[in-house]
Structures are given as C-alpha cells and as structure tokens.
Image (cartoon, rainbow, N blue to C red):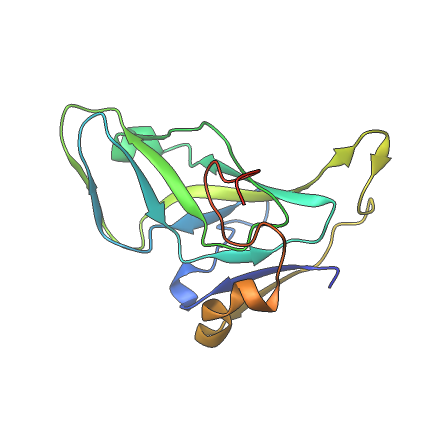
Amino acid sequence: MNKILICSYDTTFLPEKKTPEAACRDIKCAEEITIAPGEIKLVKSGVKTYIPTGRYCRMYARSSLPLKNGLILANSVGIIDSDYRGEYLMQLFNCTQEPITITKETRLCQIEFCPHYRGNQQFGTSDIPAIETRVDVDLWERFDEEFSSERGSWGFGSTGKN
C-alpha cells in the first residue's frame, strides 16, 4: 500500500485539521486521566497508522497545551517510525504544582507525516501520499497482524529490544 492509513475504533478520535491551512492534524485524549505534579504519563490517542516506507510521523504538542492544560510533551517531538503499529501515545509532563485531569476528547497534540532519507537515497517520492481514514473496531484489534512489521506495536524505547 502506498498511502498512509489512519485507523481508530471511534470517529471521535480520527485526527483532524481544524482549518484548511493547518499544517498538522490534531489528536485527542482517548481516556480521562490525571497527571500528578512533576509526573510523566503516557496518554492514549485512539489512533494507529500504517505509514509507507520512506515516511514517518512527527508528534508535537499543540501550542495551547502548556497555557490551557499546564502540560508539555515530555520528549519535545515524538517520532513514530513507519514500522510502528501500536496506538499513538502522548508522553505528557505536568509542569504545574497541582494534579491535572484531562477529559476524554481533549485535543492535546498534533501529528505531521514527513519523508525521511537514508544515506544519499530518498525513500518515497516527492509526491505526497494519499491519506485514508477508517473507523473499524475489527481492524483496530488486528492492526498489528494486518500490517505486520518487524517492530510491530513495541513502543517507547523498544527499538533494538525485540
């Protein structure tokens, strides 16, 4: 498949551009969660992707995240490799002195699909691949099988451990 597939189990969690000129798609919190002061938590997004070789995804905090929620993306920019099949998790840090409760469906981060290079070779093309979205509970459950890769759904810090 030469297109990016974004999958969720609920239309609520499909990443969306809020304006035609938006560079990224917003992703939401798929659970209600409380983060204690000084704590880092992994927050579910309800999103999985298939990304063709030669592309990857960058995850950024929304610009309002610190002001509205008192949170920052703990790793500054998240990198999701094309061979990752698990649910996107937002690594959030509470930089306030109070517990922060995030309600389900709060827009927290944004994602962008980008080309990448290996040595002097560019994988992919200069064309932007199509993006398809699907709401499919069955596909969500078997995503790692349907789009198998060596890495699969192994998450943070897993490269080289499997």
